[in-house]
Image (tube, rainbow, N blue to C red; front, side, top):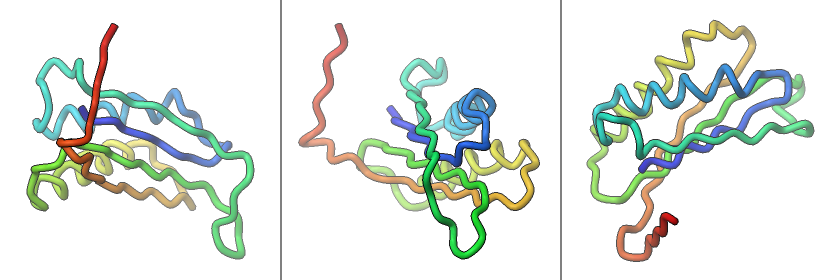
Length: 111
C-alpha cells in the first residue's frame, strides 16, 4: 500500500512525475521503509477542460487502507506535493487526494 494514481494533462511527462510521487509516499514514513509496497501509475489525458483557459494539471489520488487519522493523511498529501513542486511547473494545477480503502472489503493476491 498505497496505490498512487496520477492523472495528468498530455503535455506533462509521466516518467518525470512517477518517481516524485513515489518519493513523496516513501518520505511520509507511513509505509514499509523498503518502498516495496508503494504502487504508482499514471493516466494521461488528451481531452480535458480546466475552466475557460486550458492549462496543465496533475491530480494524484493516494489510496490507502483505512485507519489512519487526518493528521497522517495531511502529512502524506503534503509530502507528495512537496516532491511535485520540485518540477517547477508554471500555470499548472497540482492537487492531491487521500482516499481510504475499506480494510474489510479489500482483497489482494500476489502470484
